[in-house]
Length: 368
Image (tube, rainbow, N blue to C red):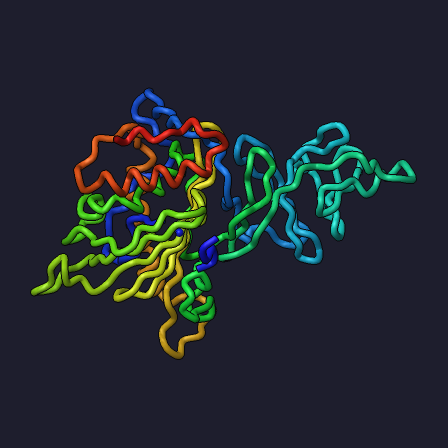
C-alpha cells in the first residue's frame, strides 16, 4: 500500500468569507430528498465523536450505520466503542450504565463488561458468562477525534486514518497550530447526504468559482486514486491581485482522503490552515457532518487558545465549508451525470475508486 499515512478535497482552505448557509433538516416543502443508489454502510474509518467529549469514566450514546452504540472511557483513559445493548437481557448501556475502573456496568442487573466487550462479572454468581461478548469496534484516537472502523463483513482495518499533520510529511505537529477543538469546529447532525457527495468535490474544479466565488477556476496538479487512500492537489486563490491569471496562482491546497469517511487538507501560500472533514452515516438516509480547522501559530505565540484574529480566520474557513454543505444536503445523486467534457475523466476515476468501499459490487459506474 502506498504511503497510507502521508486522501479528498473539499471547497475550502481559503479565508474569503461566504455567507453562512442555513443548517438543519434538509427537506424542501413536504418532499423528501431522493435516497442515493449507494450503500450507506461503506467500509472504512468514520468519526463518531471528538476525544474531549468523552472523559474518563463517562458513557457517550450514539447511533451510526443503523446501530445503537456507546463509547466509554476507562479510568486508565482507554476508549471503547461497542454495541449499546447488554447481552444479558438487552438493557441499553447508555441509559444508566456506568464505568467502574476498566469495566462498564449494566444498570439492569449489574453485569460487568470489559474493554473487549467480554463479560467479566455477574454480581450474583461466582463466575462470568465467558461465552457472551458485546460487539466492539476498532477505535483510533487521532486529530483530537474518535474514529471507528466499520465493515459489514467484520473485516479488520487495512488502511490508516490520515493524520492532519504527520501525513503531509513536512515536519509540522499540533504544537505549531492553535487547538481546533472546540472553537474551530462544526457539527451538523443527520443531514440527508451521502459521503460520496463530499468526495466528489475532489474532482469538481468548476464549483469553486460559483460556490466559493474564486476569481479563477483551480488548476489540479494531482489526482491520484489508487488504493484506499487518495490524493488531490490544486492551485487556487480566493482574492486576485493585479496581473494574476489562472496560470500564475501562487497558493493552493493538498488533500488526503482516508476512504470515504475522513479527509485532511493542508494549505500553502495563504493563511496557514489545516482542516479535517468527516461524514459518518447514521442510518439509510442521513449522515453526521464534522469539520475542524487548525490555524498556524504566530511566531513566539504559545497561548493555549487562538487569539481573536485566528478564530476569525478559522470561522471564515468554516463558512466556506458550510457553503458546500448547503449544496450537498439538498443534492440528488445523478447517475449517470451530465458532464462537461473536461469533467468526465475526473468523475469517472473518482467513482471507480469509491466503489471499493461498498459492501458489494452493485454500484457500477455508468459514466461512459
